[in-house]
Image (cartoon, rainbow, N blue to C red; front, side):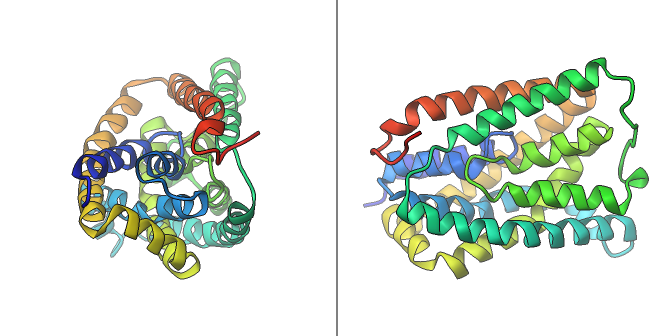
Length: 278
């Protein structure tokens, strides 16, 4: 019988972690392993499958931006280029990682620690450097900027690498205003999450079926709805935080969060069902 409380907890994990620099697929991996005893490869695929819940958050919150795609050519171009580059970079990484996780052990905390250190470094660099080029927002971004964001988002296909952390930090380093960096990162998530969901179904069907059997269909529905509702609140809060804070403070805070979660994941990882190791 499905455990509704476990399903709600799984949705909370997805709904919060997707928008923070702590790799939601990794947090879902941990949660589904602990709560439902999923094998590592199935938990990894399930982390991508659960993107569908956060997609609901993004579509609901940014529905006006989505509607504006009919006449906003700049936003359309940005999403098109970022999505294509994400696919080019991310698909091979996902395929290789999926095969590796079926045969080897992997500690997901290490990439989060690295990302946290990078975010902290970028924050202090921005704080004390006078050479940062100020872009502002989408209006000042060029194709090369779109490509860099796409590469950053594609790399996030790796376990332990945060999509939001990679894309937001990349744009902050470009000089994009924090609130615009978060907004553009979250908008780029919409097509990326559709792709991640589709890839998990096409390339990891057996692993996803294993996860669905363990969580059960009702549990999946509860987790997805929970993730969508919680995600809307988290997006709203983070956008307000980014708008009120200095750019370097945003990066440092993100870095501290990623570093802290990464250290915990690295330390506790080896004890989770014996699946993780250095």
